[in-house]
Length: 360
Image: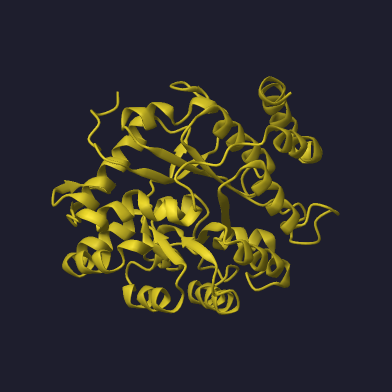
């Protein structure tokens, strides 16, 4: 059961994922967030696709179908790196072509997870490889919103500090085979210097909750950079440890911060609801609540435009729309036909009946 709705004002969960075909509660992934969205009275959700470090093309098709079937759904598509370690994609499947296809289908932006250290290792490249240049240039020109996961918490590079759950997920980076935390940060600085108008939201506060002075430098230098406060819990521990400072910081930069949960289907909806409830209370009330683990978290008690910016306005400004783009069924069907040869047998068997039902 979901808690009684507590969010009686406009809010958009800007950071969700789909990673399974079904669960017991919702059945098909096409119903995966609707109990949550309706039960918590959210105005909209944004589902972020993952590249082929997860499902790739299949994830884009899943999310586009979700968007087609369910109103008030935004979506950010992902790019597929077909040759790994990174190499030349087949003709007509380069990154810029994929990007343009996704935008024509009706995606509202692009999700990049290419800055996560294990993904970079899989791709066998850095973010500064020329492979990415034309993509960044095109997205800057178009003003397309990018949700960009870069790095992970810096303790994941320290054997004494990295949590066991991170190690179990393959997110421990101290063995010398992964890019260094600050080296990746410096690559982002180089990209922003080259493409200073990028409309980019760095996920998870850019993992800079312990380094707000560095984030402030980025905000001052690059007018189109924002961050989201999608958990990791380590971020909220840093907010609590420096509570009074962050009350002022969030007020000063309320136009550069977005809210999202990172809720991932097939988790049960009560987990999504628990998280958005905690985030709402953190932003909009002065309540003290048990948040991540057994830690207590005090709310910032933001009001007026400061609160509204974070809860929904900033996202709408970033995507340039107060309603999601519509899915172009003809373009989505063409995308399925073009890329179906790289789908796994399981992906094809799950998606083909849905394509027949909704697109043909």
